[in-house]
Amino acid sequence: MTRAFRVILVLSMLAALALSGCAKATPAPTATQPPKPTSPPAAQPTVAPTPKPTPVTKTVVIGFTSSKTGSQEVPSTGQTRGLELWLEQVNAKGVTLPDGTIVKFEFKTYDDESNKERVQQLYTKLINDDKTNFLISPYSSGLTDAAAVIAEQYGQIMITTGAASDATYKKGYQLVFQLYTPASRYLTGAVDLLAKLDPTAKKIAIVHENDKFSTDVVNAAKAYAESKGYEIVLFEGYDSGTTDFAPFINKIIGAAPDAIMGGGHFADGSTFAKQMYEKQVKVKFIALLVAPPELKFADIGEAAFGIIGPSQWEPQAAYSEASAKAAGIQWYGPSVADFVNAYNAKYGENPAYHAAGGYAAGLILQKAIEDAGSLDTAKVKAALDAMDVLTCYGHVKFDTSAEAHGLQVAHEMVYIQWQKDASGKLVKQVVWPAEGKSADAIYPLSR
Image 1: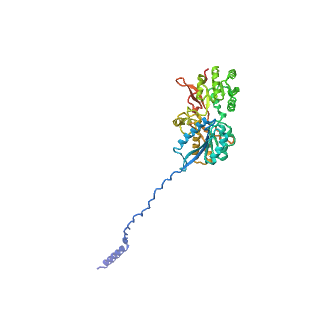
Image 2: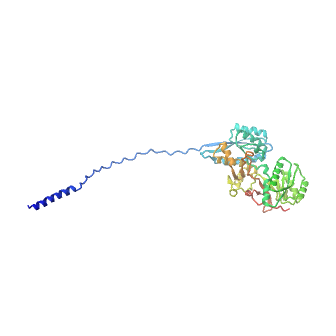
Image 3: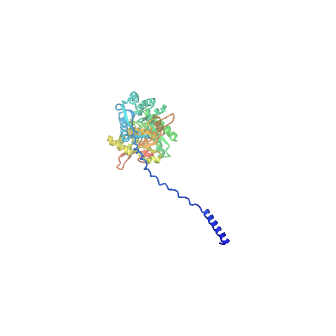
């Protein structure tokens, strides 16, 4: 072996050793652990569905007296019938409060015999012995005034109906709420209607019965008309029982008014209207108290045609959801037709305004409880204070001032006018207010 060959051999061996030392060591494979068997999920306990709580039903006691005897028997009976119809309807479902409580209603009532002293005894008994929650008034301003002081004294809310006097609501009461249009506004709507029909009419003659009711009404109408710029060209009263109106008619003719307003009650109002027709008094507009809304007024024949009279409510009143929307007022309750049909089905006759007032008393209390979401007196009072609603009975809103809290400020007298149907028969039509009218007023009168 040559020396050169041995050198090459040594270098080759060194190179081989170097290469083997530089080669990366292959990592030993990691032993793979077999997957542990998965345990089945633990069974979850079954949760039974929560049973819905059974609604709690609460019975609210409403107390009132009615005149089953005495001078107020007839109108009081109508008022009570209206209330009974409302009770039947509201209890079909009840009122559901926000907490799920279903409220049903029950009446406690006694015969007040049209007696003011008995009214105070009975309302005290209703509150203390019968544990009433709310009260409805008796019929008539006098009996209501006697009952209102008891309601206020014992802190119970009273909805009054059948009571038009303003005075009760100017005694500082906070819990007595009036549904009827006050006596002071019996004829103010007639002034508004005249203004709507004829802006050029400026002269009004007022001739009225000299009793307290009629005098209060015309004094308020006179002040209202003068505030609107009218001239009262004649303002005279006649004694109750007057049958000869010739002296007053002669003065009316001499004053040449655009409109005549006044009257008193049925007998004198009917006679006054008849004698004005017989004398062919040239006047464009006549509005009289009490007599015209009575069906018997049509017995004076052609003399009734065109005569206007104020009423708290009439079945022809066209209050509706649409008229409420047009007036920007919330609507509540059944339509006029539904109320009239339900009353007719129950009692076999059309409701008069006394019945409508009774029905509305229950309906407004129901609305206040729903708005309050509570039976708490303070919350229901707040709901009544805030109420502004149109129902089948008309517009309802209460004065909230300290001077006249609870006085009705929105409900308007419905003004009817005797017109003729297609067959020439005399019929009543509601001509005011605009949202409740069933026909346009005939104006001017053609005499």
